[in-house]
Length: 94
Image (cartoon, rainbow, N blue to C red; front, side, top):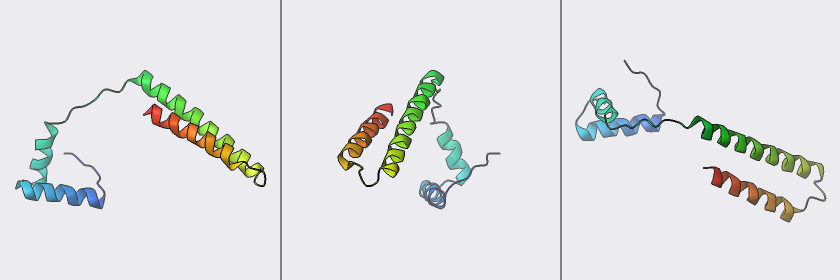
């Protein structure tokens, strides 16, 4: 027996698929299980990604602290520049 949780939207989508295919929910799941490919995670790559995201998080925290400390003199252009650099780093990590 397989038990899983779905959001309401996911459940409705699955019910729609099973109805349109003329299958029971069990038949639909069994049919689709054969088409799945399980990908093995590269643990070393995952560790590097987590480390990178931790550094990015630390940078965001430093920027937030600086902005909160220097609210009156915060240079918006400088802050935006740092945020854009962080955004690029996050996109590159994907």
